[in-house]
Image (cartoon, rainbow, N blue to C red; front, side, top):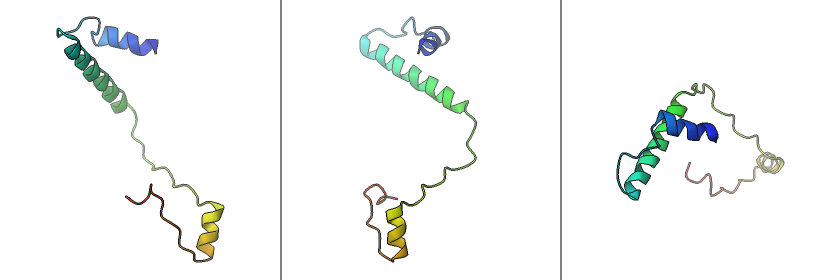
Length: 79
């Protein structure tokens, strides 16, 4: 946490606001935080493999073996 605060204070000049007024200063802080997050994400190496799907549970295997249709989860209806 201290490293992040130090980065904001020294590397991005957050000790002084460019604008007057609390709403504008807050907006400057939010945009700076977004900028820092984008910089950090862009420096990560790209992932080459997609994570494997979870294996079916014992109950799902039982349903599949007996030809019983699984009920759709609310989380999988949109995909």
